[in-house]
Length: 276
Image 1 (cartoon, rainbow, N blue to C red):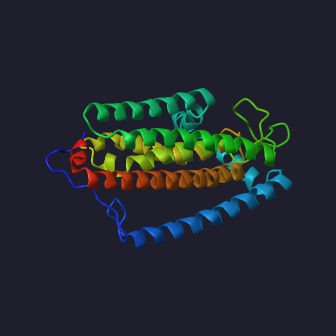
Image 2 (image 1 turned 135 degrees about the vertical axis):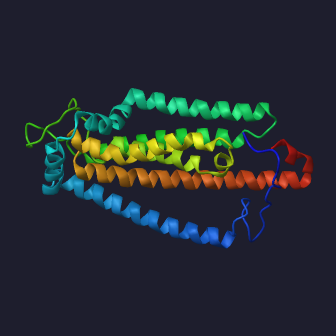
Image 3 (image 1 turned 180 degrees about the horizontal axis):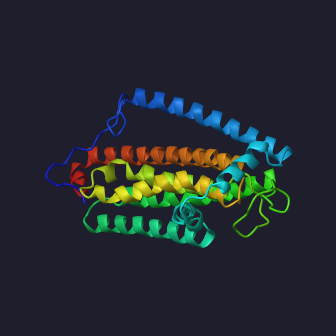
């Protein structure tokens, strides 16, 4: 899957560069900025949970947003396309989709191993994808229960609910959070170095475009279906972004440690460099 006409020597980290050859000082600066924004986002999310907990009723702009979206009447196929991410995000389809991606990455790792190359990167990607999605889903359930905001009810509010009414709390939106964490992590992986160097990486463009569409459409579809208020969706986007950035940080930290370990081994045993 890689071009073999030119092999780059593995980067060896020192006090000024990372294993990937980046400036360590610049990387640390970016990390500090990212952590600062992440903490600010976390504070905003916690405050929003408290506000919604003590004021669970929909806000005027929540009701206006749902009524506006539901009053639009585009061609029937438009709403069908927009609602597809919600359908794919139902429990059974989402589990199947996660399983397909997880085992696909494991198979790619095994293919690398069969060619004498290291499968570590692909195995690590599979494990972190599973962790990111499962852990974020579990935390979302806990937060939903703590906030305890009732779902939209067409018998109380002048809206339509086009899905079966379920007795689960609604803030933040689990569908939205799930898609940001799931497809966001897949998007991130698709731009990492091993994938960028794949000669057939253009085959991933349709999947990347779908991931972007899914992340953008899921929030709109939840409001369109009447299953969530606008504030639920916004909370889901923020929650999903927090989980996504956290697991990307853990993934990069882990791969950095593995790269340093491999660089030290190669320094002692240069023949290992020919094993990929």
